[in-house]
Image (tube, rainbow, N blue to C red; front, side):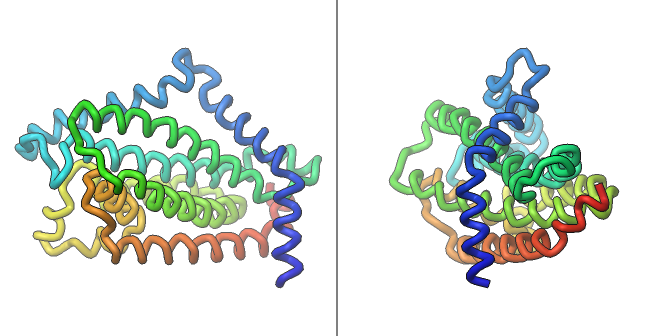
Length: 266
């Protein structure tokens, strides 16, 4: 086991330049036919925030606050973190099949492809955080030390995306319909992330357990807590950390066991 682990790290070091090139390539392809290019990364979440704020402020009778955060900031946090998870996992799921020609011709550690897709989405997500902090300043969110601690739920979310992405990229090689099933699953995950409604409403209705079992909501919750200066919600912090580590172990194990069969099914 030790030899295999060391070999993985040696391969990663050997091919890290290729990984960086795959990440750049993925970002370029994503915005290849867009006039706005990477600027759309800033405009799109901002426009979505405006629309969701207007719609749900009217439907839910919001006065502008969601807990300790202004409602637009509350929505934007959920929207950005969910979009990263959705884009990263969908990209990773398709990565092996979309690179089938290269996999058949040149040897490259196959985990590089889903990892590159996840990291490209991660970079785009980090850029989009500029919008969040700009809106937070405009909405007069009081800065605090806890804002720096927001890096913790971000890292947790990255770990979860890598673990789930490796798992999905493996299954997608053998089950082509997984792409459609995951689209439905993402819709269910989105509605249990409390993106555009207050989580207290679901807890009051007795369905809070739907939020508690969703690790994505846990990361969103702690990110919001950090931005508002309230500190971590420790049960969510612990659960998301365990989920992230376990998902990487399972995802890497399944990927490693099945990667030699990829070329026969592409």
